[in-house]
Structures are given as structure tokens and as C-alpha cells.
Image (cartoon, rainbow, N blue to C red; front, side):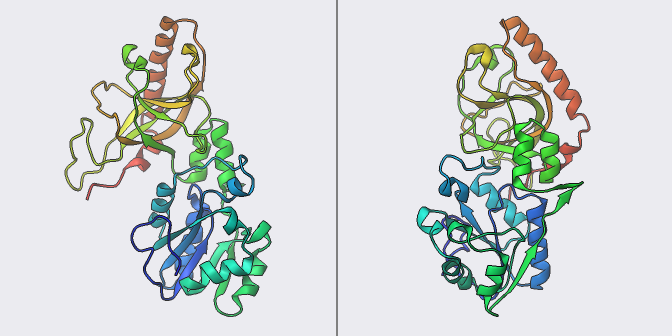
Length: 334
């Protein structure tokens, strides 16, 4: 029986018949959601079980050259469940696993889930040196399950894929990234102490380091929202049951603070018109809605403060009735 490395408690339960969906699912964009929708449709009530991989296979096969990830693993699992997965099985993608043949993968990881159908993207590759493809999977099924390959979903005339989202983020085009994702790009983490310089300048910020393995928009200033993720309010008090966490409008800086010769890349978020938030050590989400400007090194504090005043004003304007605000209602505390 396949066991998740991480999951929700269902991962060790035996599965009867199921629809198995296989993929990386980084970002869980509309293309991924369509795969799950079709899986539910094909299954006629059978549970949909997702097999995904961690870390990204490319980071194991080509160390140091893997893509920056759009979501952390726990976020991926939650998004997949939100898209209709009954269970998510996470395979540790190790060099030993990468060396398995396509047949071994099916025998050891797919068949234990008792699939009636296996659903993948039409470009799905698997097994040692990506030797297996859709035709290989159909051959290995040998009548034991049906194989369905689905084409990529398009947004406008562009195929939706995780690499396109990463390219948009690298360009600072968070609106295009949101169109490809079907929601604003979200960066999460636990607030830590920074240099306390923002508070001294009149713009206290919640600071998140940017790990090297995670995707983040290009350096610059953005308008967006900050949401606390631990079911508590601005001062750390528990929210009433059934109350969704507020999404506070914010001006967001991404970069290394070149004015002060900083070296660590951070996401620094100032919640508009609030200097009373108590967020240290709290888990938060920062949602990016619109780019305001690129990163600039200023010659002095006065010029920096004047620019920050302008950034806040422009962020306020950008967020007024911004379409991304409606998509940020977090789950209620239950």
C-alpha cells in the first residue's frame, strides 16, 4: 500500500476502486483543475486520488537546475483537495525513485491504488530518464485500467503551464501570472524580525525571507493583500468560529534593500494605514495584484520616504475595486 510522506491522515487507508491522477501540479493552475474535473467526471463518483512528487523531479535529475516552485508542499496539497482530490499521495522523488522503470512505477505506486482510470496530461513522462509516455502507460495498463490523456488548457492563445507562470513572475507581471493561475500569486511564510527600519521610517512591515527554491515576483514594489493564516486577528487574538480572516490591503516590496546595501532577498509588506499589527512569528500570505514600480537605490532617506509615500498612494489607487480583491476571501475558522 502506497503511503504519503505527508498528508491528512487518509494516506494510510486502503483504497478500493479509484481514479488516479498523476503529475507535479506545481501551482495548481486551471489546467490542473481541469484534469481533476475531468477525473471526477470520468469516475462517476469514484474517489479521485492524486499522485504528486516532492521535491520537483528536475531538481533531483539536474541538481541546481530545478525550477523555482510556485507553492510549498502543504499549499499544493490544500489546493489539490480544493480542486476535488479526495486524497493526495506524495512520492519522495529521490535518485533511487528516479531510476525506476516505467513498469516498476506502475506496479509499485499506481496499482496499489486499484485504479479504474488513470488520468494524466498528454505530455506526461515517467520512469527512468523519462522513458515512459502516454502510450507506454496504456500498454502497461494491460486492460487493468483505462488511460486518459488530456491536453493543456489555454488562457487566450497561451497554454497554461507552471513554466509560463514562472516567466510572468520573473518579469514582474503579476497580473498575467494571476490570469494563468486563476487567482493572484500568493507567497507565504512566517513573519520574522527584520531591520526594524520600516517602522522607523513610518512604514512598519511584515518581513518574509525568500528561500532560493521558491518562486517570487521580480524585485520591485507591488499592490496586494496580506492575510494572517493562523485564525487570529491583527493583535493575535483568536477569531470567532466561522469568521474568515481579513485580507488587509498592502504595499509590498520585494528585493534586498539596495539603499541600505542589503544582501538578503525579502518580501516586506506594509499594511495600508495600520501600525498596530502584531505579526511576528505569525504565518501569513501575501497576494500580489499589481506591479507599481521596479527596485531603485535611493541616495538618501528623504528621497526614499517620498517615494514610499507615493508607493502607498499608488497601491491604494490600484487596489480600489481591484478584481483580485474578491478572490482573497480566506476560509473561515472552524
